[in-house]
Each structure stands twice: as structure tokens, then as C-alpha cells.
Length: 500
Image (cartoon, rainbow, N blue to C red; front, side, top):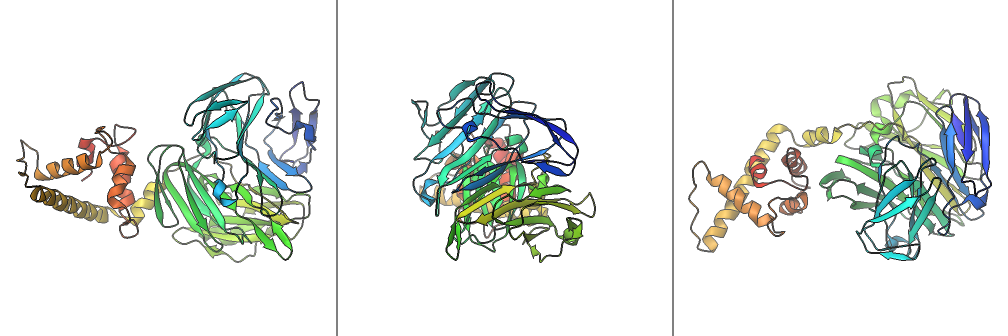
């Protein structure tokens, strides 16, 4: 399904071995065009040339609708970047639904060879060859070639994919079920398109609960979500399980990818399968949007997020939106839900001013079926909102008091250790103060990994384990300590001492 705000001409092609193409597809401004893709173009694990190349004379939005008698899924596609990119796979752990296939797919360039490197956190079998976890696997893809890789026993989340030319990456599950086998696949944006601030609004009717998964691409990623602090390294993820009526924000100091899994639902005699979608970052919110509900028997919903001061300025199909709003705690945002009541068609949303931006995710339920997709994922601009958030929770004066309190605590630990072991208190040399000696002692105590000479954030977080609910300055203290470090992996002794 292709949508365009302006007149556009679209061409679709496949590899010459696949007898399918569509040329000169004219799309009028403000309209949509549905193109049926034959089932023989579907990518299976033994296929290698099942990619589609779509080019357009003007910007368009493309929804892929995967529909059969027993399942439906939708995904929004992203345009290829002009430069090579870095991707990370996301899927759901096996413990939630039992045995199923977690998978990812890579579609190579349409015009050139692609050299793709895959680093999985679990063992992989690719075309009969076995690869150990964390061992790089290099593949060469011909133009229009693609590959699909799955695992029946492991969660593939955190698998890293890097290509020397722009490619497209998809991940999800081949079969996940509450009733019937439901396919869930989403195109994964490159790290460049990830954000640092997200708002979570629960889906309607998720009887079995919801799972939010937060994936990091950089070491030392600090994530604050739902009142908790998580410290993640490259390829690591955090999981938050919650039920309906739980709205919350997610903030980080490095780009993160946030995915949402509705764990399934039921209504009367119908059971709805799980839904997977990606949450748009606040920096990807848009000031104008068109959505299309699927052409099947679904009751569709749209969760909308907007700045609370502008919640009464949103228009839908040219009419002011009248809807109850929920204020999201500790944020400037509010959320509402629109119910489309089995109405298939196109709807436009637009605030009264182009300066107002909003986010939206679309989902729906049918007979033993469901779908979901993010719609507003437009901008790639990043902002350092996490620092402002940390400073709001811990102002400068509070941080200064916190540092003195921690330093005093360290000194008590140091002196107790000296007395308990009948050791002689070191005499300061030159301009070395007693506090420098205390901090050196704490540094050495924490640096337990073969005395590598620096502290990473995981080591530092051991000091504050269990205290995050009582000490709002902990996240800002850790973040400020690591800001100017010359070490990518951690902070050296001099920087550690300067933290105080």
C-alpha cells in the first residue's frame, strides 16, 4: 500500500529470476494505491533473490500488509540511507511463548554487491554452517540478493549487522501465537535513526500484558524508564513488563531502540495474537500524518502522543479531535486513543499549527487476528534531552551535596578497612590529599577485572545497587563522571578523582 501527499510515479522491480515488476504506477496527491505482491516473492530461508526495489519520483509512504486466512501483520518501510549503516536485531525471548522461530532478514542493495558482517550474541546456523556466539560472520550479497536467518532456541536480540553499502534489515518472529500462528516482522531502522526520548502509551485490550524492550547500541548507555535506571552496553537490552493504564517515559544518554509487544488478548470467543511494533522517538514526531487502516475486518485504534499544551489543537479529517486525554506523569505529554470501529480507509491528522508535533502508533484486532505498526517515525534529528531530564531531577546544589555525602561514605569505608586489618594509614605524598588516597582505594577496590586501569559503568553501579529510588542524583553523577573521559570503555583514576 503506497500513500503520497503529492503526485508521484512509482516503479517496483525484483531480481530478473523473479517474474514480477510494476512500472509507471501513478499515485495522485492525497491518495493511496494498493499493489498486490504474489506469494512466490515471499522470502524463505532457502531463497536468496526475493527482494523488492521500490523507487519513486516523489516522497511516499509504504505499508507492507502481510495477510492470510490465519494471520495479518503490517509494517512501515524506511527509505535507504545514502551511506552504509549499523543495525541491531530485536525479538522476544522464548520464555514468553515457548518454542518459536526468532529471525531476521537482510535485503541487499539493488544496484551493487553488499559485504555484510553479522555478530550474533547466540550461536547461528547459516546455510548449514555453524557459527559460535560473538564470532563475526561475513556474507557477500549480489545485487537484489537477500537472506533470512532464524533460531529456534534463542532470542536474537542484540545481533549486530554492518554493511559496506546501504541495506534493509528486518527482524521478528515467524510464528508467535495465543490462538493461531501469527507472523510478526518489522523493518529495523539503522542506529542513526534511533532516539533518546520515548513516551509509552499502552494499547487497548492487552489482557495478557505488555512488554517494552529497550535496546542499546553503545557501551555505557544509561536508560531511565518507569522509575528504574538501567545500564546497558552494546547489544544489551532491558525488559519492562506492565499491564494497561501504565503510561511512562523512557530517556537515555545514548541512542536506543524501543520496541513494544502486546502479549495478546481476547474478547468473547475470540483470541487475539500478540502484536509487535517499534515506538517512535519524540524527535521523530511529525506535524502532519496520513494513516490507512487495513482493508479487512479489523477494529483499529490509534494511540496519539502530543505536548499537553497543544492537545486541543489536533485535527482529524479536518475536524477538531474531541477525545479524553491522559496526562503522562513526569512529562509534558498527554495521550489519547482513537477507535475507528471497523472503518477501513484513510484518515489525516494535522494540528492547527505546523510548529506542533505528535506521535502515533496504529494497531487493531480482527477475528483471532491482530496487527500493529508505528506511523510517525519521520525525523532523524537527535537532542540531548536526557541531560536536561537528569538536571531537573538533580539540580546543581543537590548534586554537590550528593558528592560530599558519597565522599564521606567512601572515607568511612576506607578508614574502617585500615583499622580492621591493622594497617598503617598511608601518609599523603606531595599534593596528594587524604581524599585522593580514599578515592584511589575505592577505585582499586571496584577495578576487579584484572586491574585494567579504568572503571566501567557497570562496576560503578555496584556502589549504588538498590539506592536509585532514594537517591535521584545517582544517574546524573554517573553520567557526568563519564562525559569527558578519554577512555571509551570507562573512566581512569584521575577522572574518577575529578568526579568529586
